[in-house]
Image (tube, rainbow, N blue to C red; front, side):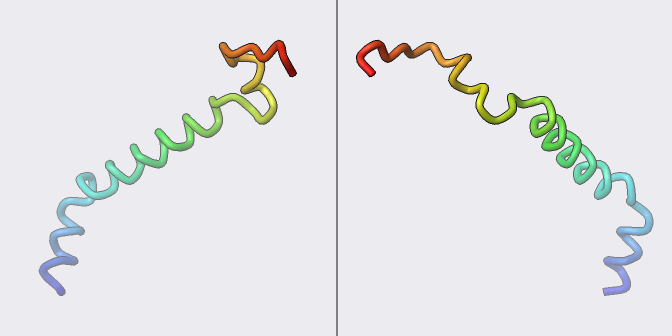
Length: 50
């Protein structure tokens, strides 16, 4: 277990960077996405019978 901790200590950038990138991408998609109730405005379908 100590060799694993030593590996993490020596290579912090290689295990922190993917976590930060994934969280950043998820946050960007979440906050830049359309809010609730706007999906119908962008819909290409038109239901004239209803």
